[in-house]
Figure 1 (cartoon, rainbow, N blue to C red):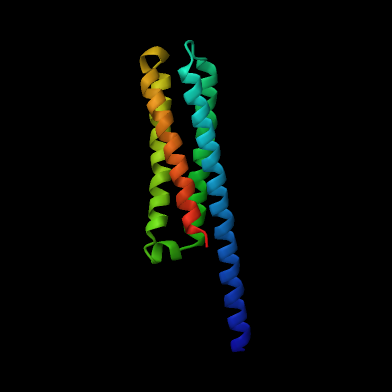
Figure 2 (cartoon, helix red, strand yellow; figure 1 turned 180 degrees about the vertical axis):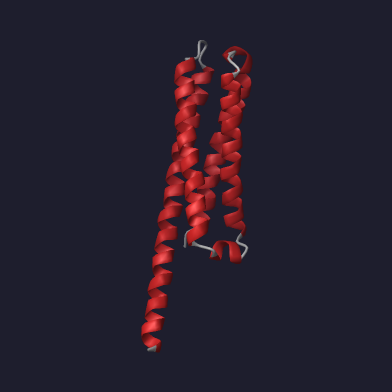
Length: 147
């Protein structure tokens, strides 16, 4: 009886660990997509005559990636309470970085909605650079959480 309980517990731990590894890999993948999108928007903003629609499209695509990151963090939190229970600093850092990406993205969306691309161009560029850095740091945080 003890052996079957131990085996069941081991299988549960392994399944949870495999799920966490998959989710963390997905977080790294989506962070990379946000990073690449942000780099593309930065390049578009450097042009003499930036393509406003291409910039909007890039911002929208990054928004989808950030929503996926937020969803993955919620799923991972629900499935792996050990991150919270052990007070893992890397886990807290990962969650904070996802929140920062969301803040930078929302700021970029607001600047784009303001209408005057030329007026908000430098703000958009700074936000794009912050998104690039934040996404890179998020990838590193997810990597540190993987065994």
